[in-house]
Structures are given as C-alpha cells and as structure tokens.
Image (cartoon, rainbow, N blue to C red; front, side):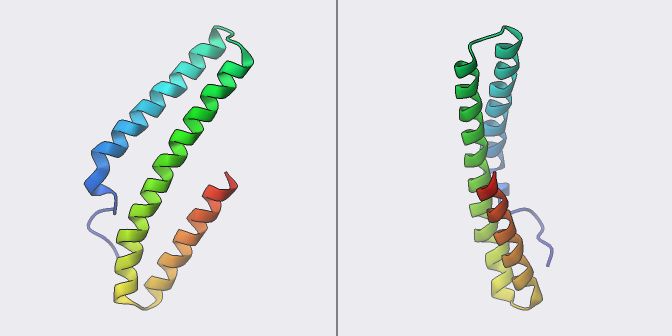
Length: 97
C-alpha cells in the first residue's frame, strides 16, 4: 500500500522548523569545539541536541503509527503485518540510540 503523502505532511512546517533549530544547535557545537569551550559545556549542548532529535523522531513515529500503520491495519492483509514490523523496528532503533 502506497500513501499519497507521508503521515507527517500536516505538520511538515513544524518539523522543518524544529530540524532547522537543531541544525543551528549543531553549528553552535562546531563553534564551541573550534573555540575550545569547556568539555562539560559542549557535552551539555550535545545532550540537548540529541534530545531535540529524539523528540522529532518520536513525533514522526507517532504520526507514522497514526496514519500509515493505522491505514494498513484497516485494509488488513500482509501490508498490515509489514507496517507493524516496520514500526516495531523503528522503535527498537530509537530505543538503542
């Protein structure tokens, strides 16, 4: 089953805004290292950027389950099983990171 658009399309602008903010955080990290900032300060900012990425990932996962997986389950068949496995695999990757 192919969707006309991904489940996050309704919040695309929000996700892009958050990702641009994270991109700025990463650039800030590069500057911190270039300027030889204190190790703990750099690590603190890395933690903040990581948490921000995790937040985006969880939001995308929620939208994937609510849209793509839910639609596949409604239609049934092997596509439903594949979408559930795909979501479980994504959750496992997030938990390991």
